[in-house]
Image (cartoon, rainbow, N blue to C red; front, side, top):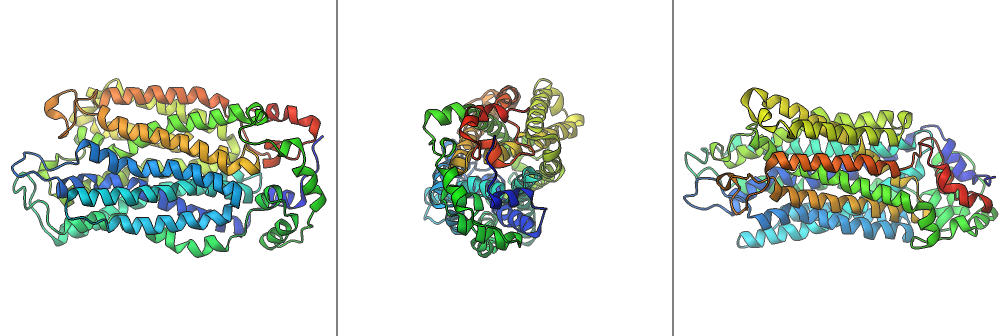
Length: 534
């Protein structure tokens, strides 16, 4: 029989939805708004960077970033994010969630501004500086993943915990949308103020000197929402689960949560000592006991996040290339530099508004009703279906009358990514691992996702190149084309469906019930089987 739950944790589990829940969602969510804005706004300005810094006089097409430079600009923040997820995830379990939380936010603010101030006497200098600051920007973003998810899961009640964690992550949708809107406003303003002919009319005049400010303003704007929430992030108390179960300070946990919940809570020091000394609360990450109880769970969370992000990031970072391929964005030569930014930002905004944001918030509404497992399985399944529906008759979608249909189908894959595994892969790792390893395991799962994002970003960059040498981007070898790239992504989504079977369903259960942290010794062996109620 399970031990009686600690009073302070039982009070959190049973608490009605209160103002502090929404405050926590906003404080953590604005970090995710910034995360998404900073990671995805680069796709709006890469074409502009190519025109400004890699222009070739007399070339029939505008300048583009060389393959190695484009890979670095698009991927360096993802590499930084991966490293940050592992480092800050581990640090959050060692020092506490709150102590590390402010560091990540400061890194994002400083490096967002520094990215826009990238300097150099030539193209190589500017791009090198940009990549340096975007790596450290990614490092800070990486820390936000495990810390925000863990803090929200440990603050939430068990009835609506999934919705609260998903709501934090759903701010990513607004971040992507915000990046598109800022791109639209800035590019439209500069395009109106500084008239320029298309590249095909006057190549040199098509990129006005003021275009160099456009990409810098767009990148720096990401610092604003993060800076606005720094004070409130520092005012949040440490989570009771870390204080009681990891730091073993029952008195402080009760005092902190008494203020948060506006109730008197007793400091149960004897109970904390007894719980912390049990076998269920003493094994480490690299122990046989962890492998036995949580090994398959960690495999499930890492593999599904890895596979999901291959597909998700390749679509998001390179959707401008897909829109160009089907003619939804005009050829680069028919536009001036700033107007091309406007067209790319418009496409990203429409996709975010019509599919990305609704998908996130539908998950928030349904995750505690139909469960994480069902949503993730459904999402991977329909992503597979729509990806194959795009890829197999690809020539059909490239014909003029069918291009809107292509965009609708493409938007549906985004919808089911967000009403599906893109949200649930973030939520579940914050619920199913013990408190002393929760941030670390979430960081490992998230880092596996970013490894998938790097594969998607770098792989798709080369794979999606045309099989016709005359149609490839400057400096690229021929690839397998967009059609076969989409088929590959469909296969990846199918494997995501299979690996979802390893992911448990945490709906409606307390964190300690899921992890066995309040179990008696004779229940330890049964803890794993209890949470596979799928």
